[in-house]
Structure formats: structure tokens, C-alpha cells
Image 1 (tube, rainbow, N blue to C red):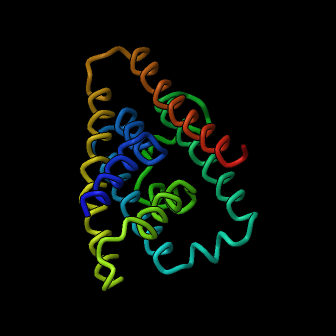
Image 2 (image 1 turned 60 degrees about the vertical axis):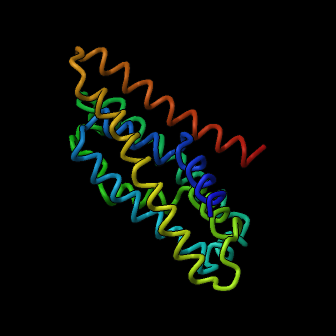
Length: 197
């Protein structure tokens, strides 16, 4: 169980689309919108876990093009989120909405995020610690992973909110949002490289 907990911790805390976009939403929009976004990510990641545990993910990913489609959708969506975070409050027409990404956007990100499936597949197919009862093991893994997942995402949100609340001028905040956005795009490019190369 300890090895599983460590694996969950290190796989979740490392920068990926979920935690980086959480920090970005916090930096661009503040605490309350960030909490809503985290709730969406939470629902989405648990839906992905259920899809993996049920075996539905294996069926879905048995079609080679599905992985490519998900990679394209998630990459496009993350780039869109990065642009919204970066240019929040600007006068660019298609980004003019001041609405922060919320629950629905968090759910969508997790459902189309290939990393979410890979991580959950690693969690639920490996690290066995209760071989006599699969259901109890899955429930314990779900509980442990959520107990680790929640504080890590709030930690990343807090890091973003710190930037949001810092008494910086508008151009300095814009630079911070650019860095957050470029970090998200960098993660997308790494993801594309690992799946293509």
C-alpha cells in the first residue's frame, strides 16, 4: 500500500495538464474559480478511473486511432486553455469572455487527456496489495489516490493564487500568465513527442 501511495504522489505532483492548468486558472482568475475547476478535474479523474477499472478503456484504446484523436483533442484544448489563461482580461475578441474555466472544463480536460488514462491504468493494473479481493483493492486505491490527489491540486491552485494576489502591475502579471501558459504548451509538446516518437 505504501508503494502504491508513493507512486500516486509522484505521478500526480509532477507537472501535467491537470496541475499546471489548475495553477494557471488560479493565477489568472483567483481562488473561487480555481476551486470550481478542481472539482471538475476531480469528477473527471474519477470518471476516468471508473472507465479504466471497468475495462472500457481497454476496449476504447483497442482502436489505434482513438489514442491519436484523444491526443489531438487534449492538445488543442490545453492550448486553448493556455491562451485563455495568458490573455485573460485582454481585448482579443474570441477570448473576450471573462468566465473562468469551471467544472465542465475540468471534467472535459480529464476525459480527453491521454495521461489521465495512462496514470489510472498504472494505478489500477499494477501495485497490487490486496490480491484476495479485487473490489476492496480498487476501493482502497480509489480512496488513497483521492486523498493524495486533492491536496496536491489545492497546493498547485494555491501557488497560482499567490501570483494572482501578489501586488504586481498588470504587465508583470501578464508575464507570469505567459510562463504558466508556455508551461502548459511545453507539457503538450512533450506528450505529443512521447506518443509520436
